[in-house]
Image 1 (cartoon, helix red, strand yellow):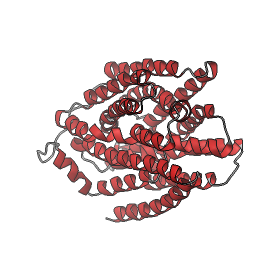
Image 2 (cartoon, rainbow, N blue to C red):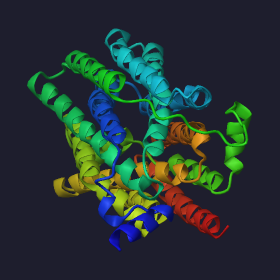
Image 3 (tube, helix red, strand yellow):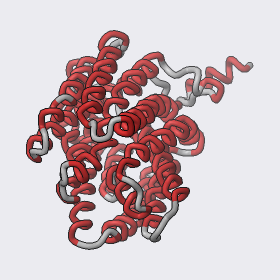
Image 4 (tube, one colour):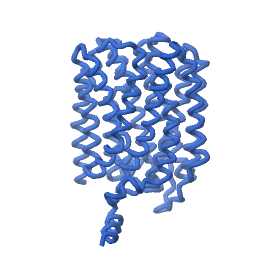
Length: 415
């Protein structure tokens, strides 16, 4: 009887409750290991960028906003869609993802020779993030193609949880290195590059290629066909919602700088803030994915962005204490847990297998460009007004974006 119930759930497209964690594919775990090492490397760099650029190299908030936009999003969009189409056409998801990891690993050393020459720094960050843009969609396609449709959010949350584990270790390692040897940014960058090579070795040697995907209607992925994905039932609204919300979400660096300004914290605490964010992400990632699969992915996703609006509102209150600043950092990790993997699961569930990589790449491109707009706008508002100016703007923008996104997702579910 129980076997029949279990089989019926599978045929209905739902993963049985008792298999939601145990049935996670080995491919997901191995890709999680790759992301674990890669995120140690990336977050070591990302966590020191605010103090490295603003405090150490004396860049202005606007310059930092442009660089942060490059690091957080713009460069991801440069090759993401093209690499996704190529991976689908050739069935080379693993090879394309590996190339992206390799490019990012090699680019880490570039910051060592860039110095404080702003255009060179921007170029190096662009190369690093191009690597991220190349690898993200093929990697996520491999996760979704190896996972059951009814447990997509769980599978993505397991991967994102391991990814967050690296994000826990990375900032903590950078924090400890800078505490032990103040100003030793070169040591942080060298260590980051070495760890990135370890992640590259895992995907190159241990991750299997996904099985061949059967094509339907003899349609081969192309730029035109991939752009038409935005009109596919259910997928277009998800891309639109993701882009709208990313455009009114401040990056990690600006959130940490704002918390530091509000509490008069030492700039050296910023890597520790990143560590706490990643730790919160790690703790809540799998529960958030499990809840999304059971309660509703759209509900969990919008709840995550509501947390961001709450953070803006609290930061507008002057003179927060230490407890409040650490609580905000933890909430920021909860936001990531509720949105990152859940959005990928929402999109994957609407895409045909043979166009999975292209569709995810299109979504990543839109979100990346939105993050560029967000970072540049936040920096511009900061230098043209007061510290509260971008917070007020982004608070009202977030509330409006959440309401609009809720309406779009409700209409999508009724369609």
